[in-house]
Structure formats: structure tokens, C-alpha cells
Image 1 (cartoon, one colour):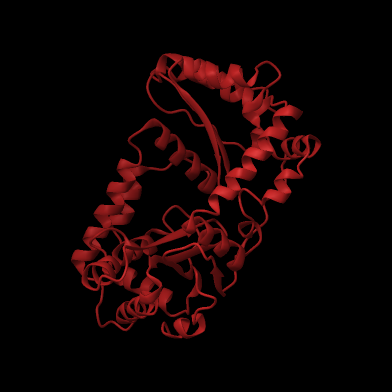
Image 2 (spheres, rainbow, N blue to C red):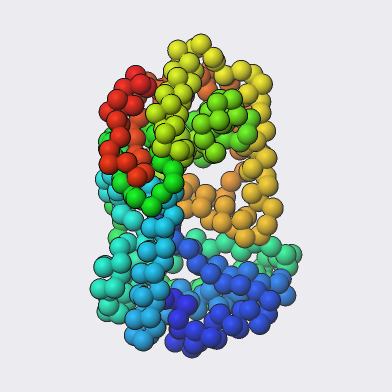
Length: 372
């Protein structure tokens, strides 16, 4: 709704005006932040700053636009119900988390359709503050930082700095959940372990390295064993999510329902071999994982948009801009013993399991017991 008009601009004055200069403007919401951004050629930097400043400081939330937008968002929510991975992800958050992370980002259609302009304005007034915002500008045309800072001050300097409500802390609660969905050709599953939160910049590096060895890319153990050697799945991988108060590690895959049991048992066997030391992480695997993570870090900063997003996120989480060289050095300094300890700690706990398929029920308790 912030794009639907401000005190000085109509919806068209915002979106079409940006496109007329060869740029784009958009926003997104995650569990921890809402971001507004505009990308324009460098010579239009001042306009990009002004348009974003106007959107976040002076939205009017027109009643007629709100009614239309509610219908659009309700359609978007329905669309995500057609995407199995999205359904599984949202069901996982609802089932295994308590606090802020248990809430779906988009909400449900019933609540969206019940929203009022008065409620929207109240939320905006309570939660939008310069004190709780991070502003990042990235790209070309920044050779004169004094001039850039002056432009930023002109556009954002009057934004009130007030306290905002604190977010609702989250916690992880182990569990088992199967969701039946009859219009699927495959069964989807997630194995989830509690993991390290993002307390410091380097707090997740060791676990990230282990999960890269386990399930990131074609050369990972999971892909090679479950996909390439046994042909049980089309895709399988491992990853992590780390917030400042909670973190999880997960293995995700989808397979034909007739191969589901064999797939889970194969994954459990592979995890057990790592846990008991039968197939320890090798120096070559660790070296590969380090290069993959460092490469992703560097390549993730190639474009101005991705740089801005990265540094904004890290500032929100840790209070300042990263030293890239220090980050790389920290990754290079991680040892096999540290990675082995992280793997042992992860696999010392039973995973939670969330599945999605046409089946009425699945033997989740039995499968969970395979990982002990």
C-alpha cells in the first residue's frame, strides 16, 4: 500500500515515473524486516533517494486502493497454496515455532480482507521510525560522499526517531506433522534440527560449512548418495536458517511416494555414518565447502542491489557493516575438528519431521527413530 500514493505523489507518479527513467521500484517482507528499494541509473540517484523517502515517510493508504489491494493479496496467498514447497515451509513455521516466526508473513486471506485503513495507519504510525531503520545506498556515482550524505539528509533528515514495539521473540519446539494435499504427484519432506542462532557474525560459519558438505550442490553427500547413486529423488539439499534468537538446520527433498520410505532410511543411514565416524568429513570436502561459501559471498556482492541488501541485513542483525576480508579469514580458519563437532551435536538430537503428500498419514515417529 505504500506505493499507492503519498501526500505529494499518486501511484502513477511513483511507479511510472521511476520506469520512465529506466529504473524499477519494489519492496519485500521477511520474518525480520520490510525493505523498500529503488534501482535507477546513477545519474538519477537523487530522484531514487527522494522517491523511497516519500514512500516510507508520507504514505496515505487511499481507501479505494486498499480495497483493491486486499483482493490482490488474497489471490497471492491462494497462489502460494499451489506451490508445494511454499505450503511445506509455512506449515513448518506454524508447527515448530512459537512467537514471531510462527506467524505467516502474508497472513491468511480472512485477516487480510478484514483489514481497515484505520488499522493500517495505526500499524504504520507505531512501527515505522527512523530509529528502527537502516538506509543503504550502493552503486555508481558515489565518488562524492559529502554530496550523497547531504541528499540523504535532505530527504530523510525529518523522519521522526521514536521507539517502536519490540518484536515477539521466537523459540523452536520439536514436533511431527503430516499435511495431506491430494493434488500432488510427489511427497515432500523436511527434516529439521535446532541449530545455532546468528548471535555474532561468525556464529553460524561452522554449521554452514558442515551443511554445505552434507547437502549443497551436485558434489554434496546427499546429492551423490540419494540422487546420483540410488536415483531416489530429483532434488535434495541441506541448509540453515539463523535469526538472532533461534536457528534451524534442515534437509529437504521430494520424491515419488513409493520411494519415500527408502529415501528417508537412506538419509538416516548417511547421517548415522557421519555421526558415528564411519565416514568422517574429509579435508577435500571441507576445502570444497570453504570455496563454495567464499565464492557465494563474493558473487553475492556483485550487483548494487545485492550489496545493499547484504549490508542492510548484516547491519540489522549485527549493528554494522562487515569486513569482507575478515569474514573470509574466519571461514578459512575453521578446522575439521570444529565441523565434526557441529555434525555430532546436530545428529545427537532427533529431527522434527514435516511432510506433505497425498497420503492420509505417514510413519513419522518410526522415521524419527531412525536418526537416534
